[in-house]
Image 1 (cartoon, rainbow, N blue to C red):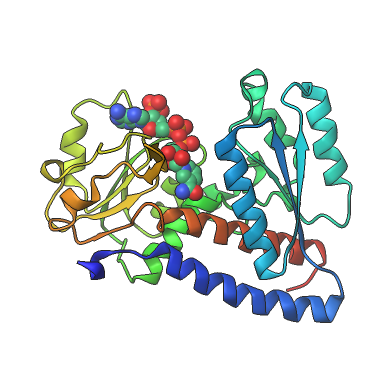
Image 2 (image 1 turned 135 degrees about the horizontal axis):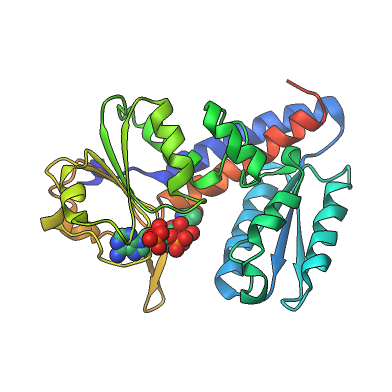
Length: 287
Ligand SMILES: NC(=O)c1ccc[n+]([C@@H]2O[C@H](COP(=O)([O-])OP(=O)(O)OC[C@H]3O[C@@H](n4cnc5c(N)ncnc54)[C@H](OP(=O)(O)O)[C@@H]3O)[C@@H](O)[C@H]2O)c1
């Protein structure tokens, strides 16, 4: 059964150590270290955990990382000013705005993401970089979808002609995946809360990507034999992390599955490091 696991943690560790080597070579050449600035607004405990993991991983691969902690009552203009300070700081190569923002600022999220200069957009969520996906350019694309594709390709999972069903239509997960999967000639279906007969779509999927924030949303009786499942969610139940899929229930029937934790989470962080390095190279005109 172990062979069914798509081990995101293991691949992320491998990618991070390869990146560490590359970063070292570039720093030796340029005497300039890549640097990521993460903007954390408010005190959400889960966001704090994620930011600390990203910070630690960056440092492990040789990317300098700074966390800018801001009060949750900062004004809209105040936050834009902070982003612009980072835009104008030539020692910063990547900027990440940790989401979700506190409730009072959340409705302006698109404006804040637009404020980040596209060249420093380490999270790939600025409208310019999102637009680039229309042309199948994934250079600075969103980290979670990028990590999903990297993992599927690492395990030689064929996408051409496959029916891929994504249950999620967010800017962070579902929407960027549409273009990445079309680029690889998959047939893509997006489901959401208004989808009628969602179980019909789930049952037809060759590859099922689920990110609905609901533990045990996917169980054995819902899936097709031999389906490949990507479980993106990180839910907390009684202090323990789990995804949207009842892994033990589906393990025998599915062909492959990502675990939670140890699946898409570490891949997302690895892609953040990769994007920061890409942004650094672009800003220094290095190939
Ligand atoms: N591992 C990582 O690094 C990583 C990174 C990013 C996100 N995540 C995780 O991924 C999950 C999703 O994140 P997100 O930001 O995309 O969340 P989100 O914005 O809340 O999106 C959830 C999506 O699921 C759909 N949905 C919810 N309940 C459903 C149901 N019963 N039937 C069908 N569709 C349903 C929603 O549909 P509507 O659009 O109709 O509301 C929405 O499109 C979260 O658990 C998050 O923690 C993990």
